[in-house]
Length: 175
Image (cartoon, rainbow, N blue to C red; front, side, top):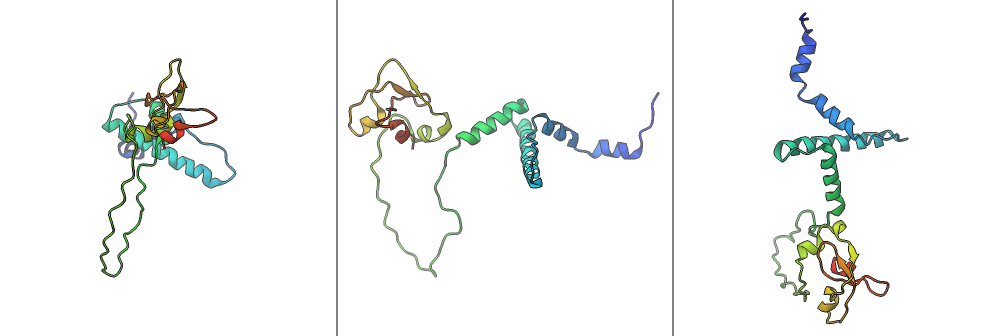
């Protein structure tokens, strides 16, 4: 038997625009924690809503993946994100129309490593030293013309680097 729906129910269902879906996704892996300060819950609620909204946009544009996998990817990206540029922010200063010619910056001697700077310096949380049986020449020491053959290697760059109590070429190489 068909029962006619009240007008308010029909209007809500036709104009809700996915609010229930967003609430459902928000509640799946919610970070809602008890807090003594009311604004903590509000802040984390807003973060969670932003995460769900970005997931919905990502699913429309890119491939559809589970929400948990999306959150893991975003978290991994934020953890491994390195400082992209060191440009100063703000408005450029002008000194009442004076144009001053700055001398060209001095060129620093850069080491020619076998791995590009993009790979070496980005995703810093993904580079880990691993100890292997065979030895190889330390890439950082070789750039300084020092002979060193460590057992440690970077998992992402696949180059040998010194990691011990005397010297830490691994840290210097990735910075």
